[in-house]
Image (cartoon, rainbow, N blue to C red; front, side):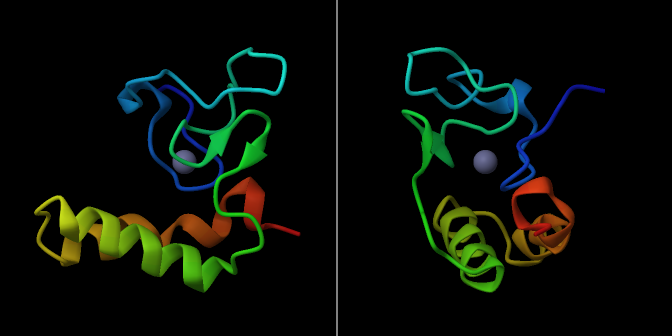
Length: 84
Ligand SMILES: [Zn+2]
């Protein structure tokens, strides 16, 4: 089992970029390119509820039936980004 993004839960193997980018241009092994870019989060300061709603909307916009993003986002609060 590969690692998954610790912000949204997407498997990093499914990320076309292979992971987010660090400020020094390296690849993040923790966060995907949709969440993390140039060493910072692309949605800074969001609450986990706002982020879950964002993910549901983004997946629904891609044509997923709504129960799929709902299942997918249920695990988000357990990920490392949201633990503090
Ligand atoms: Zn992510």
